[in-house]
Length: 321
Length: 238
Image (cartoon, rainbow over all chains, first blue to last red; front, side):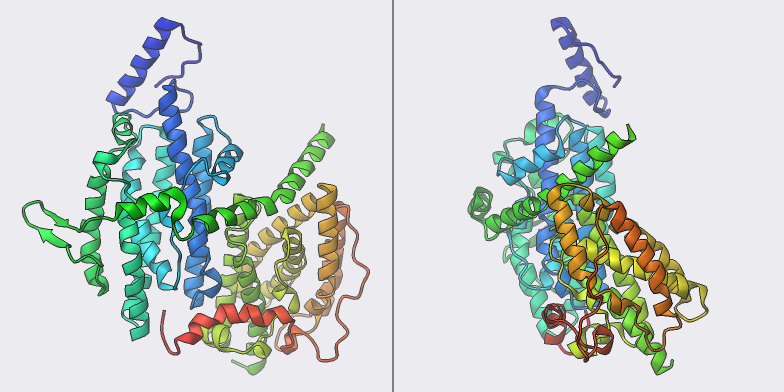
């Protein structure tokens, strides 16, 4: 679309909406200076902010194991991964800024509970194997969700996602490889890997959001080319990918109802406990309080550093005239 | 490989490993997202150096995970707890200025570490720049940040003398590097409106310091955390 800077009258507004609709119909990208409906803007801000918050809150459960990683090679891989997540947070906050909100505003909304992050990070990482399980399942689910976002209608978000997905795919592979080493290791290591998969499997399936029938934002997001596939469709795709991978790992998935359905060409799986999902969303997960409190503490403890950087920059800007 | 060379590789490897471990503790806790990326990145560079150096001395994981506190040869400066951001920056300033000089010397020599040093000196130049920029911002920022930075450079000063004690097997005249280090650090502190600490640059303890395997109390706790999982599964591979 071309930039339209003028303040439109009523007739102009109709034209702008028509141009926006045409761009979507042609599967073109909407760029920051293009006109867009307020609700489209608000939806994107909500989604990109939630995504950015998930990246930075998601650092916590994994950083929990950096100091205890059992080999120097694993420590290096984990540090690189957590650093990537901070980087993803940076690209995503920048993408949100193109819609007219600042990173500070968004962080404030996170810290005061007015914006959410992915519920998956409200589960604890209890053993080293959880780091592998997060890589394999949580990053795997994230990729399944995010690859279609590389074609999202909003340009800056789509472009950020291309880079994010490349890095996430490395994270998923290292998670799988780490679990494989455990599964093929000692009896205790194998048990550790199985226990982690048992605990992370169902929460990972919940990452795709509520069933299509109950998903409040889905229909509009699909009409706007922000979302390309439904929650249930993506969830099915993820299960189909994971089952053979679990077999390759020599681990089982904790679902007695999981079996291949020849007719549908997909795996059938058991009922998801949506009560747990809703409770965790409501703030009653095992780590909701802890994750947000840690985040606020780090931010508050860093306030004097940010103030110092600002004061220094102001002084030296003045000095330069 | 001579025993003396292994001693030197272990000493420098331990410095890098222990500082990487401390910087890893910042992950997710930094004052800004940019600093989360920067501190973890510096830690990763150091961890890479540590793995190379420790592999010259033996098996990297055996050395990192199965030695006792008294067997580590790192200087005490790198094991000091992170403290507030100013303490971390002061530790980075002192150490990166030292490491840059050391690697520059090693890179110009012909020992087995010359290749690593040539690569590492570029990484460390970035670490030094990061530390210098933050020393300036904190020293010449607000009254609060100035005071915090002053306390940090003072508190860590007594661990700086050890950096220039000779290391057996290391083909670098460390005492000779102290003059240039002091000039660099003084100049940075002056630009940051801080003054060079005047107290002693080492503790009065005849037992020695880190290079002799004599450490500070927090180090044992740091190792306990770092080593416990590896030691809980003897012989396992990860």
